[in-house]
Image (cartoon, rainbow, N blue to C red; front, side, top):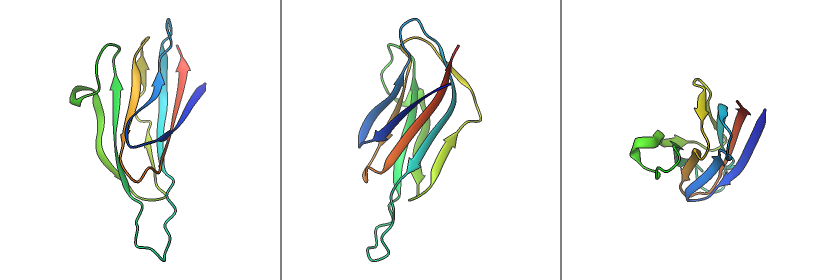
Length: 112
C-alpha cells in the first residue's frame, strides 16, 4: 500500500496522478482541517472544499466532481472510504480548497 500527502492551498490542488503504465485502486481519501481555534478570537476555522476524480485528458469540472462544497469544521476529518475506485494511467485526484488554508489530504492506494 502507498500513500500520498499534501497540504491544500486555495484553488485546485492535484493530490495524486497515476503513473504511466500503472493502475491504482484508491482505498481511502482523508481530508483534515488542521485549524486550532483560539478562544480569544472569534475565528471558527471552518473551511470548504470540493473533491474531483478526473479521467486522463479531462479538465476539472462538474462532470468529475465527487464532493461539492463540503464544510469541514476546525479539527474535523472527512473520510471517503465507502467506495473503492480504480484509476488508470494519467487519471488524477484534485481537491479545490478555500481560505483559510488549513486542509491536509492523504490518499491511500494500491497498485493493481
